Length: 244
Ligand SMILES: [Zn+2]
View 1 (cartoon, rainbow, N blue to C red):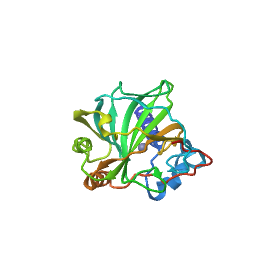
View 2 (view 1 turned 30 degrees about the vertical axis):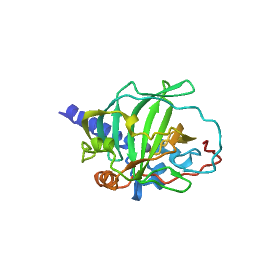
View 3 (view 1 turned 180 degrees about the vertical axis):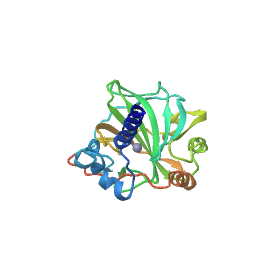
View 4 (view 1 turned 90 degrees about the vertical axis):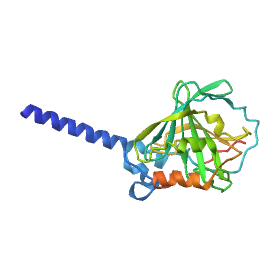
């Protein structure tokens, strides 16, 4: 009996420390962006990092940027509400190649309003396509949405968006994220970080210059489902340049 009690106590502690490790954070109040670094030791970079995202893209340096090699398929198979964003998980096989460096698309998700701004302008919605190479280095391709016509691809995802946090729905029709990109592949590039804790740096950021459209109702549907906006404020450039 005593032994059983000990076992329960140990399990209790384990689940407690796991909760602490996951580190509760949010977009406002006492666990909002200004306090992320203080919430958990592993979130330190959110406060002291010098290459943090998002940023206001400005002061562009004109260069010949390499063409983005986008080989996406209809791999979006599930939509997840994780309480911080709505995310579509993508099966293996969709890739991004930049100058022979291959990254695999893992997931894409949405922020409202946009996290990055372009010459001071925020957009109502921003999509992040998160890629990783074989070593785990990350490249995020960002797409801005302006208000306009309803987006049919978003509509198919939104129709299955789980209303509650920590729920996942299998997508009835698999999504090809190529259908969410603008015709032009012109982009901006800079070095940055994850825009959420633990704010890890060394992330290659690629922001498509041409926005696509979504309706005001679609933007509002994301905000209503999450119950809050989900954009970290723009961070200091600290001498970084934005290539165009
Ligand atoms: Zn994001």
